[in-house]
Image (tube, rainbow, N blue to C red; front, side, top):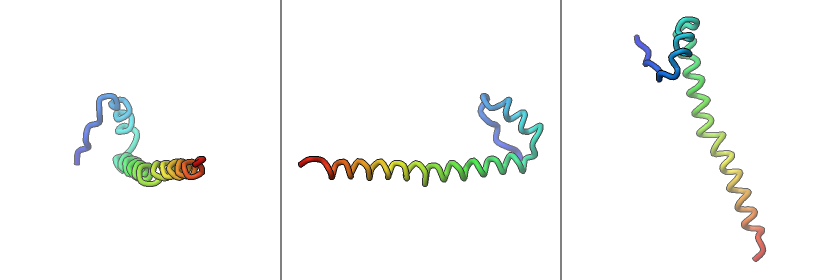
Length: 65
């Protein structure tokens, strides 16, 4: 099974990783990174955006009429 070659900027990192880490460790890092990215975009960012929306709505509601 071959691994997909990374972008040229990552060659030194990739070179070090493939010499010092097993493929299982590299795969685990990739999976954890993907889960982290998923959580970031599905929970953390929308939650902060929602808080901002609520704050803006409350400001708008309390504005002088």
